[in-house]
Amino acid sequence: MDVASAVVTLFLIMDPIGNIPLFLSVLKPVEPGRRRRVLVREIAIAYLVLLTFVFLGGHILRILGLDEATISIAGGIVLFLIALRMIFPADGGHATDAPEGEPFIVPLAIPLFVGPSTLAACLLLQRTSPGQTGPLLLAVTLAWALSGAILLSSTFFYRVLRERGLMALERLMGMLLVMIAVQMFMNGVRTYLAR
Picture 1 (tube, one colour):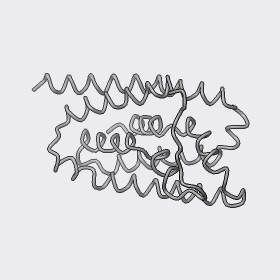
Picture 2 (picture 1 turned 45 degrees about the horizontal axis):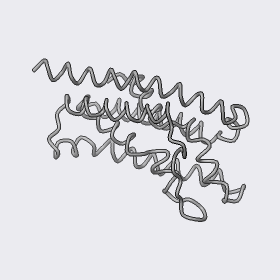
Picture 3 (picture 1 turned 60 degrees about the vertical axis):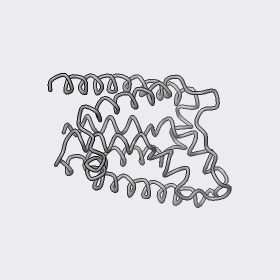
Picture 4 (picture 1 turned 120 degrees about the vertical axis):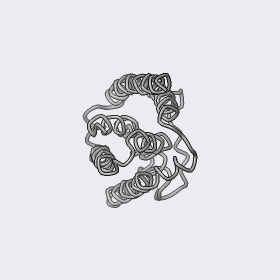
């Protein structure tokens, strides 16, 4: 497994820069003194969810009987759709239908920080590199730490980049993710045709 490539892929899927405005709006009702503690708690919960998928992902895929080509092609399609949403977001943006009061797990930890696409990417990386739990754990931890650091500094990034700067960075990250998705799809097709 190429750890650097896995870190970049997971980081792009987690999309911490695109999530900055969402995190700030969800945390707005929380007392300013508690916001940082709530954010740290939610980031830690997201990491526990990621670890669960790192250690149990292989078993899930074995139970489902999916092979590498199928996972790679499906993963490429899913990542491509995620990237398209990053480049061309819907008019309303992301939905943040959070319960009133202090957020707990939903929507910050799941699905904003670690959503279905991040978990699917963990499963895909697990399947394409069987028996390499150590490198996958390292990649997940690095992507999580980098994303968490950005989200912990969200007010700083928002002040510096403003809404337009954040949107431009998210579009750029979406373009990179499109290229990764196409490569993943082509790798899956190549693996399938080589049988």
